[in-house]
Image (tube, rainbow, N blue to C red; front, side, top):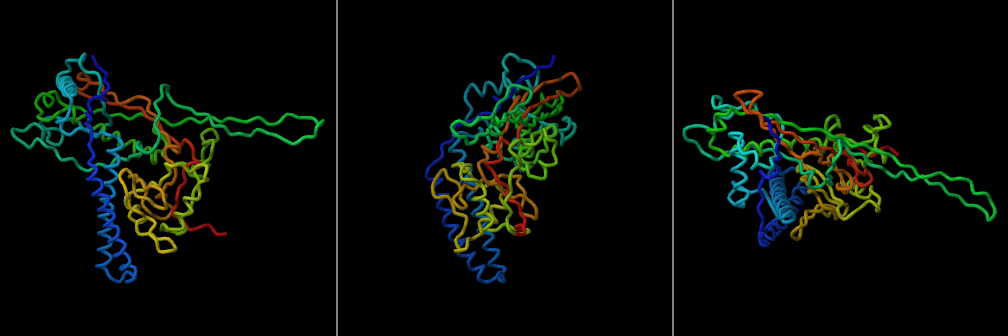
Amino acid sequence: MTRIFNSRKVRGIVAVRAEAGDIKAAIDGVNRAFEEFKSEHKKELEAVRKDVVQSEKVDRINEQIGVMSTAIDDLNVKMALGNVPAKDGDNDSPEMKEYKSDFNDWVRTGEGEGKVRSANRPDGVMASMSVGSNPDGGFTAPVEWDRQITDKLATVSPMRRFASIQNVRGQGFKHLYNMHGAGSGWVGETAARPETNSPKFAEYAFKFGELYADPGITQTLLEDSEIDIAAYLAGEVDLVFAQQEGVAFLSGDGVNKPKGVLMFDAAAETALPAGEKHPLGPVLEVNTGAAAALTADGLIDLVYGIPSERITPSSAFYLNRKTHSVIRKMKDGQDNYLWQPPFQAGQPAQVLGYAVNELSGMPDVAANAIPVIFGDMAQGYRIFDRVGVQVLRDPYTNKPYVMFYTRKRVGGGLWNPEFIRYHRVAAAPAP
């Protein structure tokens, strides 16, 4: 018999106690480094880039500021959330430890279905595993070995932190948009009042898709492995699902997956059939003013490209780490740096008075690319969770392997294009 379980409880969380002194020291360090950066950058500009050593020194300080700024952002997120994933289970509650033990027993033997309630993890990323093949699991069952495993770096997009999220119960999600259009007119006291136009509505269907994984592990490895199989499988599948989601939320084409926030430019929307176009139109663009670079004037135009009615306290810049480094060197016409470090806990760095959020997966600065999005991402893009991660343990289909079929259904798309703008690398159009 096959069984389906949710795996949400596999992940433990512990309270984070952010020391005020730690984040204050980090902020002070960024401010000191930024002052040094400005001084060295000025020397570099005065030398008209003839001094290679000076340029390398500026780049090194710039990189250090980026590292410290990222550390501050991480502390701010932890303070806001109040929790992080538990490490090695040391701080798990007694109930969580008991649950993990029950889940691990179920993974190894298939027994104890009544004790297991939730499980979570996804995508066909692992080949079938066995003791006889080291890359496929044999590394975990030697006579003696180091029980710690060092992870290779895996980049996960933080779109779920910035976009709005909604749970849905149906097979999809449609939303009505008010297109206005009501008519009116001036009349005299006794003049006729002909019928006027009525307001119109437009319907829009968001794109959904299903993620899956189906790793296979031999029963022998499940019985003999020295590592926590439950945590390992759950973590690997969760990580890959998060990576797949992140790519889709940015650049997904909407075919069996969400449609990404970068996929709603005018050219793409014009090419769609009438019923698939967003009722409020495409995301409008502001050019950088240079064929292959960002400019200070372009960033200022970007900010003022959104109507004041669509600017919110959450409006911010979204860009990757390399683009962040480029903007940190930029100045306005009065020789003032556009980038300013955070001055207190809970606040990110700012450009032109707005927060700068690093969004991994965004394009680098290049001709015709969109390396920056500005606006309120929560109002601009929405993620839809239909079915959480589910695990089906199947010891029969592919003996001697126990298969762990994992799936998740999720959707996403542009909610309101009026709240965000693309910043495309391109020269200003000819007048």
